[in-house]
Length: 361
Ligand SMILES: Nc1ncnc2c1ncn2[C@@H]1O[C@H](COP(=O)(O)OP(=O)(O)OP(=O)(O)O)[C@@H](O)[C@H]1O
Image 1 (tube, rainbow, N blue to C red):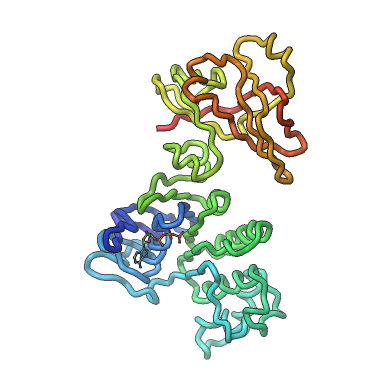
Image 2 (tube, rainbow, N blue to C red; image 1 turned 45 degrees about the vertical axis):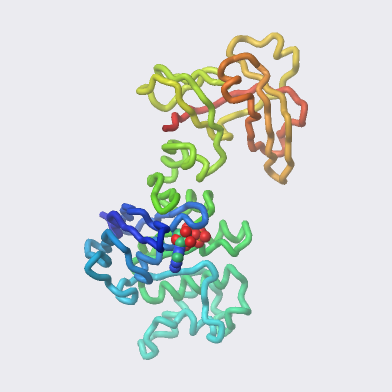
């Protein structure tokens, strides 16, 4: 069942349609990630759901009840929604305990225990409760912000880029910890992020947003493996897009004859491969000369070391006159390879593709 429903929701600022009539269903207890570039409308969407702003048109329903439409809105403090902002927005003059307990009635029985339980839930040590926010690390501050938002027992949590100020390692562990805390508490969550890996790993549902509209909404797997178009594909990871002639479940392209993920199509189309579907095996110019039909060779034109993973560019060598290669101008394929097995510039490699290619719109 949907906990949150957005129906044709619009928000304009002068001539800018920050939200151009969007629909979204968020299932009870699930996690949805909204991913998109700066200015596409992500924060506007969160503000409307939180009740900090009102839509110009459309309806927002929570738990089956209208919370905003043309005839009125339920105020933010009655929506039982928690919000965690990018910087945590803690009260600097209050202790950590006072920050967490901000939304709990001063005279509530067992208030102290509730605060220490919340700190424990989000993985904070009890000994920091008497400190002030500036005495905590960025990750600890984000945990306090989450505990403070959870203290009000929200039915829904809105996370606006809450991990973006953290460094890479901490970011991944915080993301996992927060997902677990919210899952255990059964809180329906929306996360807004620029980060594709964050969206794919955190959420059950991902919505790719562009210019105030959703380009595609689906499970992380669906969106990564079967994006509707190139824009959605590139929003969620590196993409290799090739022109191909499609028939009977096969695509003829510059990488040879590849199996595609539908038998329905018979036309000229663009197909998508993810770079990890392409493997490279060391070869020589003798192998190229003696190549069997269908074998694909390439020369490494660039390699950039970046620690565990290197970026490798390869230029296809076979059939330089083929229409497929002419169509793409033989642009190098850009791949990511573990550095321990990354080939050197100038090396000849044989190229193999695993899995199916996906046909784009
Ligand atoms: N109060 C406002 N007045 C005028 N224009 C606004 C206002 N708030 C947002 N906008 C515009 O609406 C559009 C969407 O803004 P929004 O903040 O929702 O984007 P965003 O995807 O959250 O961006 P970012 O990732 O940079 O935070 C932008 O073009 C922005 O300039």
